[in-house]
Amino acid sequence: MEFTERLAALASKVTHQKASIETEEATKNAFVMPFISTILGYDVFDPAEVVPEFTADVGVKKGEKIDYAIVQDGQIQMLIECKHIGAPLSLEHASQLYRYFAVTNARIAILTNGEKYHFYTDLDAPNRMDAKPFLVLDLTDIDATLIPELLKLSKNEFDLDSIISAAGELKYVGQIKRAIAAEFKEPSDDWVRFFTNRVYEGAFTQKVREQFTPLVNKASQQFLNEQVNNRLTTALGASSVPPSLPPADDAADGISSREEAERDLIEAQDDIVTTAEELTAFNIVRAIVCNQVDMSRVSYRDAKSYCAILLDNNNRKTIARLHFNRSQKYVGILDENKAETRNPIAALEEIYGLSDQLRAAVERVTS
Image 1 (cartoon, rainbow, N blue to C red):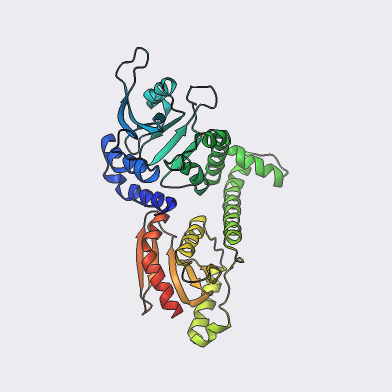
Image 2 (cartoon, rainbow, N blue to C red; image 1 turned 90 degrees about the horizontal axis):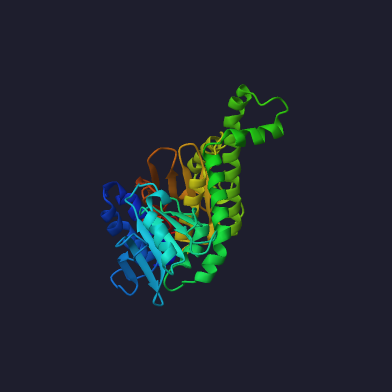
């Protein structure tokens, strides 16, 4: 499996199993050890690579233990401290990690609860662990831009100099991105005021704030969706595919196809917003079937009830339907009789588990 596939597989495991994990030890066994072995590539059963319950005397503190020490070229390079799944990740709850960082050769410290991983180094002062992480990995919401940096921490690609040199930018860019994400999710008064003052000439009163808060939120979401759509279009080398009537070859499939497409078009034009999740899922499906058909032939057509992923923008050649407008998300796949099977998913990474069914769907609509 490729690095990204292993990461997605672990993310899926965490999503499905975290509700049944109740202790820190169970968290380590179920999630952290697989992260060390399958993602970072170290042998958790080889004490020359991974030292569990690592002990070092720290001043008056004798016999304190850190959960794992990662060894590379005979030197301790990383320290890992674990909390139970769902526990908050704060340095206030990681005093051993902070102290050990100062008395070992390690330049990388990791604080994790099995779901989130906070990576620290010593940018602010030599041999003193920073108060804020330079990289934050959330397995339930993986930021693809961080994958190359994470790969540098793996056994075969370990590049400490490159990691440290990039850490400063990663630290502040990451914090800014998380701040922006928080504003997109729930705009603060400052965010609302900032944009309101640029389009509204009156005083920013309580009434104006209440009026513009949902408008700023809606505009932010629409802008984000448009940027994601444009980025995907550019990356995949295909033109944007807005909701439209099928091409002329649909006529050969009969009048029912045309009527159905017209209904979909009317529905799709009724204030439909294609979400970032739908676009990401569309991209995943494209990647899965790219060995069977040219990716430029795979498009989407959004509507109120679902977002359809089509071959040749043809409504009669449905690859999948994304039912994401509900708390429980489904990926619908049609069989040869046009009967739809809805597969529930808890995370977008689980779409990779439907690869065989999606490829079979492409084979059906191309035959």
